[in-house]
Image (cartoon, rainbow, N blue to C red; front, top):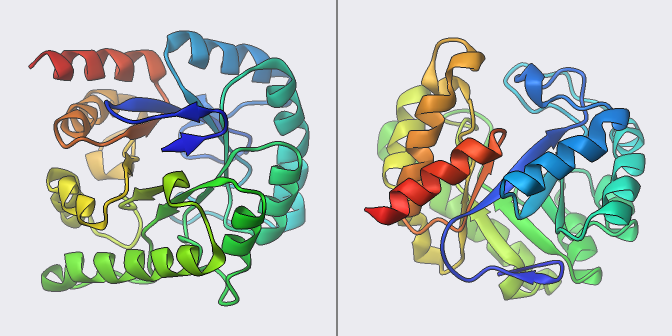
Length: 261
């Protein structure tokens, strides 16, 4: 897979989460603009190979912000990161307006939690294709599937997203799929998906797993690192190309441990 000027072909790599929001569910991930340079540098030094920035929390019960406000939170950080670091930059947004602005500023990838389906016209996919950018297509849905339809509904959503991407002309080498842990699934279903994440290889695209400190692990968010690391080890065993995480150093160590077995 290609993201920016880097190619990722095998192994499991780390995408570091940098939240530019006042209300992200994990307070330690919230980053002010004047804290951005050291935060990104530490992530890179700890082993991150892609930086993923977001200007809107998508935690359960979040309050959506407008595309304009989201962009106000992202514009300066994109400029700072691109001016100071040679690392692929992903922007977490489902707004075509924000994607357009971000890619014009030099972002390399759009991480879309609605898998190119937030709006019906296919505008997001067309913007990504026009800029020859990469995309993370995440599975999502309104409501929760019955257990006996869990995988079928996931497959249908992702296939529809891939059809949208192909029609728009997004390069096949610039697509990665995310099973949407924590989105449109109950706790048990989240674990079902993580435990059989390799099912998603059926589409022939690399995979990204995002479980970092999510509520599926229960308890306080501060205490969810250990179970996160266990799912990162599962990602390695299931040939997942990227894990998207808050704690880069610890997840890198988990990857190295899993690779030894």
